Length: 528
Image (cartoon, rainbow, N blue to C red; front, side, top):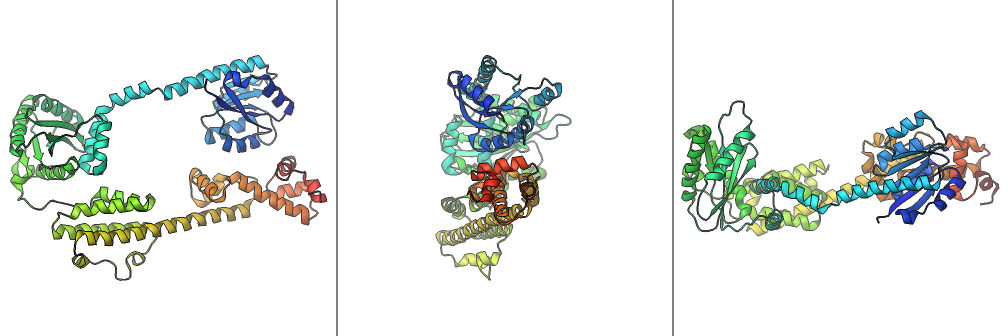
């Protein structure tokens, strides 16, 4: 039986003791993780106990059970709430329903009644957890979505967004065998379709192509890709690209005959590795563009319309994303890997392409530096980067070393700036708290609005840098200020409470005693 953590909240110690002793927690599948005297204390305990169930009285000092429930919906939405109340009041019950309370129980609650509720709650949580962990259901959903996942996989191959070392592992995950010795890509345009959605047109074309495509030693995979229908071909043997072109033209004519659509097929070159399909896809898109000159309703091979030239390369969107991610949040090793993969792209390029690639790369570094508020001269020096600098490199390896050196330099600068920025934000937060601790309405939302940060991010940042939560830090500031006022002034306790952000003097005394282990009066008398 799965064990769930319970937090018990009631301002009457006798009731807490009665419930904790009379309920056989272990037998019911629970563990009493903690107790609190009021909603404020419960909220603080929830930060680190993370209870699955909160059993709370509705009428308590400082913060009642309904307000506690509303707060927990934000900070601990998965926790189940049981409300205990001595009031048979419709309004209380209505509000309890509005905050998703599992059960509203009237006091006095006997052990049998509460135990029955806990049994029902345990069954519900078990059922929910079992559903989430149901491996067979997840597997079934995975298999149902496998065609979509495979299409996404091939789309990423055409985008060039999969690293070569990850291609085969990712293919195995989707139960695909990448055994071809040659690979090529094609793009299919369905022409004008009137009021019929493009997706339906493409699915119709895909269906006809899949039924009729027959080329020995060649496997075709078709999928929707951006604004076109794409096809990937894997060749199990050395097959002439013109055999593929003839077969595609045959199937294209059949599809036109069956659908009445005027199709154009653009075909890219063959490549040896599946991760080179992005280059073939680029060629296929370029070939498709020639329908403007040659007319639609034909199969166009890129090498029939463009003279063969050195392999096309560009510093594309995926390169920029990989480099940006590595420099901003990656490790040194990840930066080196990205630089290495970029250098590999230019090894077989012409000098002109290499120059353009190099300058696009450097422009990307300048953009990243600018976003991080780092002057480009701090990255490259006063002279910056010049186009003719490429001629000073004796090899791609030398270029790679230079680029790696400057990428790592930027990575360190960004890390240092991020560290300084984080420290500055925490310092600003501390200063704001110091200036506003006397405001009883001071909250993390107030502070985050001042700093223009999300509360979730700030809470993580603040605790990581100070070792305590926002609430605990504010309490520390208020208590230390109160202690100083008690030692050095004759102010009344209720005035000191107001000056340190507590509207209720009784609650101030309660927090003070919990913090220092004695009441404010004893602290002032010197018993400390």
